[in-house]
Structures are given as C-alpha cells and as structure tokens.
Length: 175
Image (cartoon, rainbow, N blue to C red; front, side):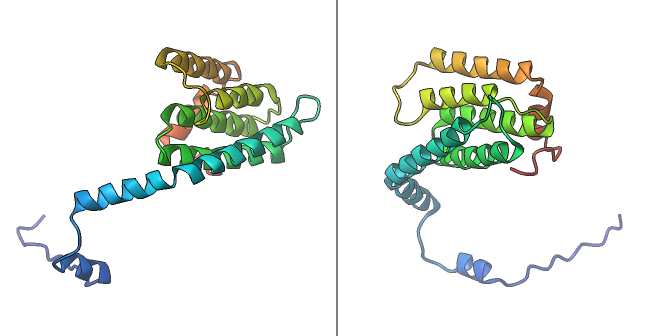
C-alpha cells in the first residue's frame, strides 16, 4: 500500500439528499411508530397465520398412503416459510421455531428423496400446540416440544441438512 490517501466518491442520491435535510422525525420515534403499526396489524396477521396453517393441514390430509409427493412437500415448505415470516414479524418466537423446524424437515426430506408424511404430521400437531390462538404453554413445555421435534430431525438424519442451511451452504435455495 502506498502512503497516498484514497479518494472516495459518494454519489448524490435522493436518499442521501433527504437524509441530509433538517426536519423529519427522530429514529426512536420512527421505530416506536413502526412497532405500533405492526401491532395494529396483529389481528390480520393472526388471521393469515390461521389460513396458512389450514393450507398446510389440507396438503397433509391429501397425503396418499402416508406419503407426500414432491409437489406436496414443496407446497408445505412454501406455506410454512410464509408462516415463519409472519411469526417473526409478530414476535411468536416458539411458534416460529416450530415452523422453521417444519421447513427444515420438508426441505430435508425433499432433498433426501423421502416422502413419509409422519414427520410432517408431528410438526403440524406441534404447530397447533404453539399457534398464536392456542393455550399458552409454559417455557418447559415449549422446550419439550422443540426437543421432540429435533429428535424427528435426527431420526430422519436431517440434522446435517438443517445445519448446512444455517451455515448458508445453499442447500435450501428454494426457501
């Protein structure tokens, strides 16, 4: 490296221009307003979650002989992924973890060319246990449910696939 200073060019953009203007609202107030707006949408979000859960259950109930087709697995994965987003938006952490596990199972089974509906059914039952409108479970009960779901992942040897997903190895590009 030479001792010469490096010139950096900052192009003038509309965003930079607006940010440099005086006025507007303070960041903390903007965040508070955004949180209030999200909270005002909780009812709609819960309705969307309920509708999406029904879609997952409908796909599962259409399983033939305890087997799901690749298209059915993709439909479950796509819908569960939408629920993960909604769960995160509205702060349903435990429910979101169940739905992420459902995504991991569905995607892992698709990539492993497995079509057993049983692990999906277990996750769907767990989904109902932790859904926003369900009876609240204690922290210990929630951890028990999540631990049992991790056993399902281990039984189907999907733990390594889920770990690759978290590491960003591109295994789950469909999500």
